[in-house]
Amino acid sequence: MHAEPPADAAGIVDAGLGASNDAAAPLHEVQPLSCFAHAADGRVVGGAVGRSWGTCCELQQLWVEPALRRGGVGKRLVEQFHERAEARGCRTFYLETFSFQAPSLYRSLGYEVKLALHGFSDGIVKYTMVREVA
Image (cartoon, rainbow, N blue to C red; front, side, top):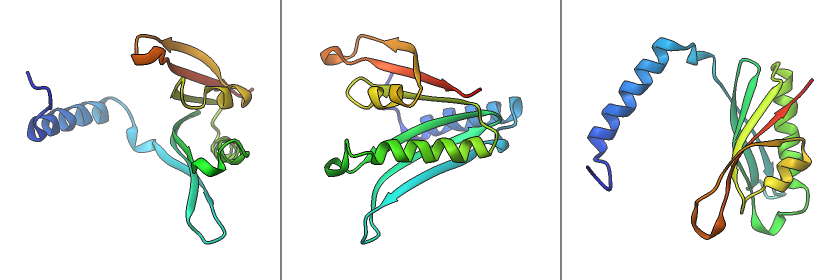
């Protein structure tokens, strides 16, 4: 038992799981997908990062510089992310978010809560959300 896993042991588990997954599924088909917002000076002020596989697309990260939040940048990033994924044939979108992050933004973009995990500190909830496109 370790509170902090030793890097060598964790690396063995990670490699073993990776080999097992590669043998079971065509993970070489997973494609990265990202969209970024830039300030006039070229620096990144927001981004949506994820991946697609078949007709499914996972939004793994969404971040917008604090001064620009609630100004539509995040919404535009997710919409562009969706457009690029739909051009690849994606119809199902999914993500995980905490209650202190952006679940209301995702609801406004058509996502529905499929799982809510309670029990985190300070009443925080972790959501798994899904958006289906006809």
